[in-house]
Length: 262
Ligand SMILES: NC(=O)c1ccc[n+]([C@@H]2O[C@H](COP(=O)([O-])OP(=O)(O)OC[C@H]3O[C@@H](n4cnc5c(N)ncnc54)[C@H](OP(=O)(O)O)[C@@H]3O)[C@@H](O)[C@H]2O)c1
Image 1 (tube, rainbow, N blue to C red):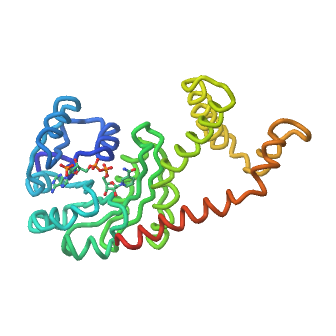
Image 2 (cartoon, rainbow, N blue to C red):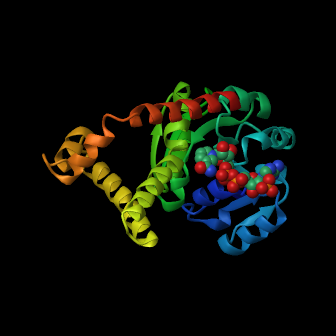
């Protein structure tokens, strides 16, 4: 095999994973859009093709990185070239190992990953599970690659709808919160760009501190909320609101959609 790793679909997520693979000469990407393929080739220095079967045939580890609705079309051409030495790594939201197995056949060793967009900033969160015929070394190899783009956790597949709702879709919800904070700052008189910087850097810094200190959330919140102080005044408004219920309903809707996509 000429390449170590193939990608089918050279979109946003594929490019995020590609960015942490050291040997770009070991990678081939199959991409439907010719313009996108040319762009990725020029910027990333990888081999590209319009033929998913050719990419899969020429590498041992194959990342499936197309949108859920494109999986069947890809499977139809890729299934015949997959053999027992292939590790097929799907990052497609909602597609279960059983569904992938039906689409891609019984030969390839299947690994399923639910990543998030933050891997493009090397701060991603990826959950990993594997089919019965995958080897421990397959999971370890996928974990090593994705670990270069953030954190990973190996988890039973039954948790994947919840993972999809929380960390898979989470970047959009946190960005929505950041926008709400920035809009509120603007309403209090801050210039729009300053309000956005304050909002995003505060979100980033809070997450960084919480992860690095491993401090539990409630004592952290209590610590910021000095009695009679400004944060406490804000929290007195936030805590009794429907905020918790809205977040729970948001994740429930995303998890439900993940089940529907399966
Ligand atoms: N984005 C996220 O935050 C996120 C998070 C977790 C998981 N995921 C999963 O990651 C996967 C990729 O998402 P993405 O955001 O990277 O999507 P994307 O940017 O739309 O990339 C998908 C790429 O695949 C190409 N493609 C479609 N059919 C193809 C085929 N038959 N052969 C080769 N290439 C083909 C598309 O080309 P065209 O545009 O020309 O069709 C597109 O360039 C999805 O399944 C999604 O569920 C995404």
